[in-house]
Image (cartoon, rainbow, N blue to C red; front, top):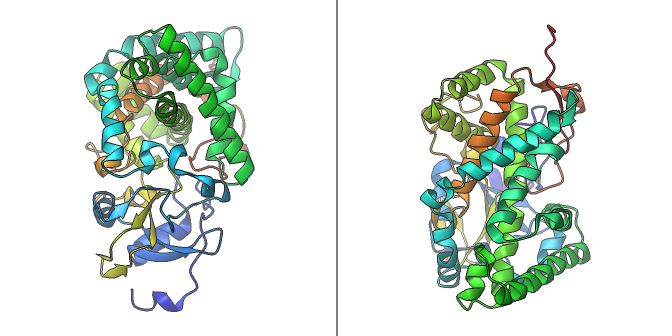
Length: 408
């Protein structure tokens, strides 16, 4: 850390460079120079940026770093996120034993073997969406007509949320994930979504079904607690996978050799190779672009840097997943990379509960796209694609594509 204290702390969130698939240059520079860097947040407060794999994993599994967003000094990336209160937190923003107890209520629903049983419905919905998208035309927005509705359909199926309400929760989710959302806009979106889910939980108490919300209600979990858990699942369950699906399709289109290798695996029915490709896309793209916030509750030394109790840290998953000590030539997309042990889903006790579902959806969605649309390509210049520079989750706003055979 010698010399870094003499420099002005850079501000975050930072803009990306010329390549929209790469982490912001500021974060990458920090990773190459020092794994722990002081940065300035939007409100002038400071925290520590953790950028390398070893230190990111160390912090995320260390109980001396709290995920409790209600603690004073917890690093907030936007003004809208300063409104978090104890009863409005999700279990992702809690420590043990609260976090452990709430997560345990959902573990069975997201176990790998349970999710594997959803392959049939996910494949059916994938095919129906592509049938509708391609019927009678040669161009469409892959985001609006495939990447977004597929995970929305599946999370509605799991939670027991009527899909006809998808516009309602998608709009509120977008507000909650946007950097620029004001305090009032964030609170309104969050409260409206919670109120909707509380009413749904109450309705299912009188008319139970096989959904997650219904099962939680039947176990005596309060409507408020059910709504808190469901809010996290509904926001994370469609926004992240939707953005990852579209961004992965774009990355493959921009890397024709990798697309050809991935298509060969799909056509050969090599499920292991397809899954390696998906893992590599997860590593390479790492769409959680904001980092995972934590607060030191004791003095902790990380890579020779003393982080004091009450100081915040941001664990940058995107740069950890480009760490060349772990991933040789890590800035290159290689769908044949041997099962990269990335942290795209986080690490430690807060590692993403829905990662098996996300992986299964991505396996099926991307394989279906490349199998059914062999001539898929962009319908607009790459330079005109608009990315989510204003959101906590990276992705594209629209992805106009065509699938016509140029030779025909």
